[in-house]
Length: 317
Image 1 (cartoon, rainbow, N blue to C red):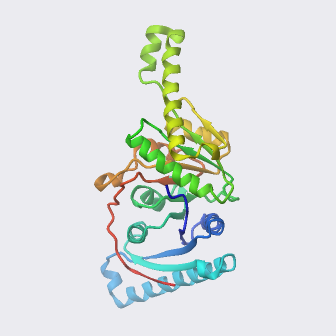
Image 2 (tube, one colour; image 1 turned 180 degrees about the horizontal axis):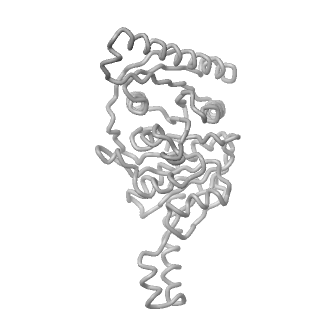
């Protein structure tokens, strides 16, 4: 499996967490010898006003402002990376997330890094991040503003499942991305496969705590065996700092474990596969992200087809 990162995109917009996202993108590009492309989007909705001379003048000012920011960020990046490993592109479209996703469908970056910029109404991750988590075919890393260091520890959340299952295929992809990201950065990886016993309350009411324990032990052993198979297939066991088997609903226990081990980043998989399903990321992942106080990297399952079509509306160098 490919575990290299050669093409990193940074969505460069004047947002609160841009500095943290930029630091993460520079670190990844530097450590992996990757090309860093700074991407900015000029949002131009299809409104009658924007077709008037005054509207066109306003769009010109907005475009110039975006270009100025892009040039400044590019110059700064080229002071920290070889000049030939820094590029930029100015895109134009009705909505930023849709335009960025369309460009990713066309050009297949290895990693897209964006500022998180959540809020009271949107949760830890803003609208752009949420749409990219659901629809962008590339792995999307949304960086929180409070991040004050390059990630030193990541929690990799999987649901290993049986060999050949959808869960196994997605977990393999999540682990591939995590190992690739950590390959040249020295980032410490912790793997977590949360589990619970279906019908535990009913069994406990009939058999009591002592009678329920064999069922719990057997379920945990199944999960451990499946995870061991996953690690053998991925060849990544020796590269992990620890493997955790927390008991509980993943949507609750994964954010808690991230806090417990002080993870800078949580890497998880999206359940969305293709078509209209691309508008939804999966209830477990949604729950984890809504409760997460850390940066997140969301990976799509193999065969994912974005509901957004490729377009070519760009200029850059």
